[in-house]
Length: 319
Image (cartoon, rainbow, N blue to C red; front, top):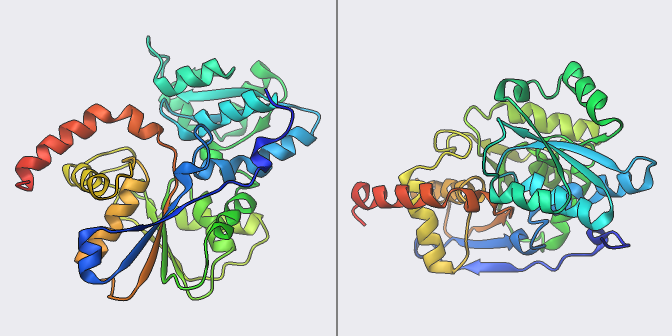
């Protein structure tokens, strides 16, 4: 445990100019904002999502926080570590029945002092209902409630700080993956002049994110400047679903850059840009920034599936 708030420290972030063959041939500049390098445990956008929420908890008279996630949740992993470092009691409500063997992500969370509470998938779908929250309060007492993914009341304030990490002049398109929409909402709040923002939904049927993102902006008292949209067709079948094409393009990306992408979020955002390039929607001379939103827990949990789908791609794509 540390005395200060480690989330107050300004992270040092690299921006890598990517030399990917198809983009180079097309004359399109693609840069990568390396939020995956923010912190080894509080990785990527989770640093920014938790930053002000944790500060508010520390200033309150209740130092317990409860949140939600799955077995390989980046958010649960980051929250548990932040709580461990800052003396905040953490409770994780986990989707699904308790397995005989915890995932590596949840093992980490337990080692950092998080109390896990497993609920059925049916109950988890009802996690936002007042009756479900009341049951949790009866069981655990007072706590601060942080929504799944960390997209709570402070998310726009935290994620808008991401824009301060790069030169906002000159980018035509800034792209990130979307799960709950909190990261994109923060980018919209500090949207650079002249740039378009693209959020790639990691979820099937992600059209609801338009309303959710506008709701986050409204609750943060931020006017919607426009100039942003969602890509809704690059989810590869749904949340955490992996196709042979996705596995192949992630492998090619890593081979050419030496940088690892996970398949749940940033891998899909990259695939969406690659498909747009192949459709001729990206023009020579354009500058694009892809935000690597970090959180590599999905990569830990999907190694076998990735290898299986990569092997399938050898037959489907003749590589």
